[in-house]
Image 1 (tube, rainbow, N blue to C red):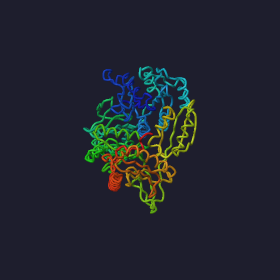
Image 2 (cartoon, rainbow, N blue to C red):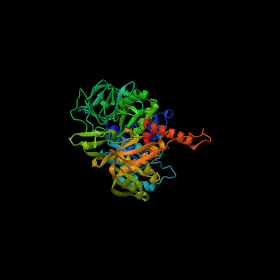
Image 3 (cartoon, rainbow, N blue to C red):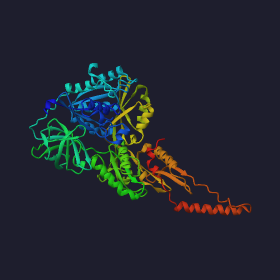
Image 4 (cartoon, rainbow, N blue to C red):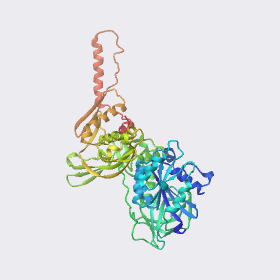
Length: 592
């Protein structure tokens, strides 16, 4: 199709503001999907997406409307996938900003608006859910005007659920979003904004052709990874795959390749073809680096191979997933996996348990640390148990994040207190009408486990949170080791700031006391730094009355039996082993 009649756009919003529902109505109104085939959240293909009500994988779709070709990308809304969102925005010329009329602007809305402005997109503001009784149209409209500097008339008021006002959105896309400006005669360059692994067809790329063209059977090269392959099939998604002989400049579509893993075709890479090879990559490519790590161990060691195979299969389709084998004296063999965030971890855990029927023990999530040794060597530590001897360490650097929290003004005090509790620094405070935007910096490790839950409870569910990785800073960090009955359990070791180590040691030993079952002998639960213990809890022994069979007679008989029991308990304490249940390895995730 002529480039002048193509419009490429995406929908950006906070979680649960109605992106996928708006996409459903658009597909219905343009006749892309027949009414009989329609179901809610049509573009969310995974069961997990439907259950959680969130978009995990983005989905492109092509629609025909008023002699125009509209290419829509439904992007994920969660902070963990912000790099995917930024690449999707690079593939478009316009963005529909959806804001919930009852909730107003949230943290993720702001983050996505900044990404869209950085990509120089035309933003079309849309106010959704105007049919709700709780909708406050004047207030939320004022927030949008304040954020974008637009006028009241620029805001399109719709209800994606009923379809009211959705045709106005489509008309605005045709009128306001500019057509692609690619050069069809130039060497071929296409941006990969998503890739996934199909069990039957291999790696499938979702691309935006910026310059040139890609035909079926063309030899293709990935400019960043250096991988090469064949375009076995090209075409568009509406929303099922629809093959075509060629993808031209300005179009969005898919390429079926003969590549074996998505690591060869990462998000943000540039595809070119041999017959019209480009010399310069499209800008903005970066390697997505995980910064949350957790150990995954099978409950039964017989399942280790099944776990390893399952993780390998998942990593074929998720290029951000990184893993390495790990062993623990207590848990046996397992894998340490790197994630983009806690939601990413949660999704992978659920997929492993559901799709591969695995029973898993997951250790406390941690982040990575940069360690500089006295010899000048640099190490990247992904698990506290890998930390070298303290005498060899010159400095330890931990990752810090820049965060933004949006809350109603009357919750400001509680939120700032929470930030300080987590060793964070508040950097700015501004107001969006009746709500406050709190900017802060904090160590990532302190926000990993229950920061979001605490924020929600402090703000009665009204607080929203967004963050991005900032840098690594030198801090006074120590490794806290935990001992059960005198034996160190390396899988429980955690890194912490020295100022927090005492309270953290006490807190974790208390939690361990709740989850480790009582034994026939007394068990000491201890926390220590280096060789020095900083906290202790005792699990008392089961009391077995061995004197029940005695009646009458001299008291010395009783004493003799009790002395024999005490001797046996001493021996048991020396040789007895404590079975540690799987819940003990997730004590940091256990809510108070």
